[in-house]
Amino acid sequence: QVSWADLIAVAGSEAVSFCKGPIIPVDIGRIDTSFADPPGKLPLETFDASSLKSCFREKGFSTQEL
Image (cartoon, rainbow, N blue to C red; front, side, top):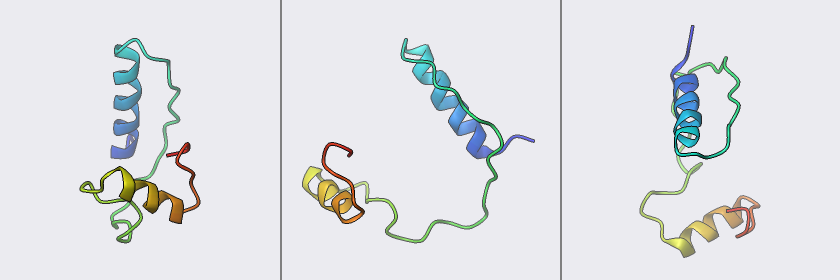
C-alpha cells in the first residue's frame, strides 16, 4: 500500500530528476495521518523574508539553514 506522503515524496524526487537535478532517493513506507499538525509549526504563506528569518530563528535555525 502506498501512502499520499509516499506519492508526494516520489513526485518531488522525479520532478527534480526530470529538471536535470540530482537523483534523490526516496524511502517508501510513510504512514498518512488523519490529524492535522498543530498551528504554528510552519510559517504562514504571507510571511516576508524578515518574518521567515524570525520564525525559524525561534525554532533554532540560522539564516543560512533557512
